[in-house]
Length: 412
Ligand code: GLN
Image (cartoon, rainbow, N blue to C red; front, side, top):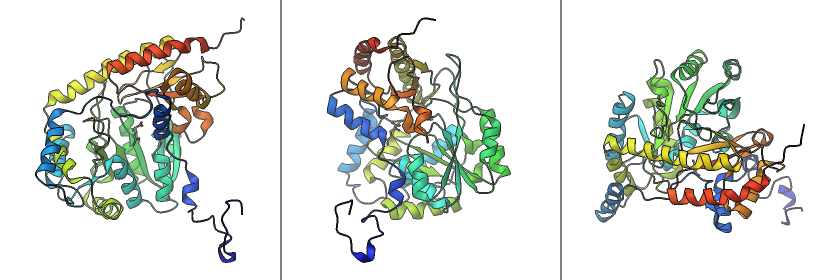
């Protein structure tokens, strides 16, 4: 037997112990790059997590909750304080009235909110529309829920300040009677695109025409640049009953390790999500949910400062990348910059990323992990800039070593 295990004659057709499902996706490249960064002592601009402290108020709130012995299970669909705070802020930020008792499920990060939602709404064979490049979780999420992803291309900007765009006809062609949902991530990882009202209305019209659910990942809601505005799909006419809005604490409050996220949806959909969530994880960490309620109480200045700091960091890293030979696609939101690496003498972006982490000492994410077909991402890598100025200085210093690898143009 090729796997070195003796099979019973009765079960020889089986792949020993493993499900077919797990063969259809690989481990996360993003998380693997973090391990590579540790192995090589590299500056980690791969996985999107901050290397600076979380706000003192919310750390104190977490400490107080542990000290006050809020250490047992919270209500499975979320601590009341946190659900109330989420509902209140949805009112403030999106103008949407949400019933915290019936329309919110708190999960172990928005990652769990997304997979619980897909498991709650998809039958095998249902199709889910996804813009590509996409945050890599959506691929395995679709496989695990039995849904078939249908990808619609986001095309990179042609000019320095342009934005990623999609073709309206290509999007329309992705919708048909098998389409159950569209996953929409705005502000977008990895491109930094912030979908405009016009684009969202176009998507809304297709959702209404084909009776499709919008599942939106809005985890970068507050990280916006250059006057870009976040518009929540749920706030558009006709979408209140057919949108699942996913968000969480990780990016807004710089606590990616806490694993507190949520899904907001109409009661019937919420009931289904709650069932899946309950049997998957029972609940998110109880004391950290209390701290979540405190986080959502932070004043408006907190959010302005967060976005302002990230803009500085974007403007710190991008010139260093450009000087080293990358073509940067300027993000309008989130905290990543996608780049084109055509100027470098490498066969593909995986070889490039390997060189970058092992020889230059910087970890990035190879573009192929954001595309269904590796070749589509073969000229791109993504950098995260959610790092201290000191870390970004060090990255800039190391990038100088890369200049020698720029492809020499052949004359003529
Ligand atoms: N969203 C982050 C990224 O794209 C990572 C999230 C995660 O690893 N769970 O890098």
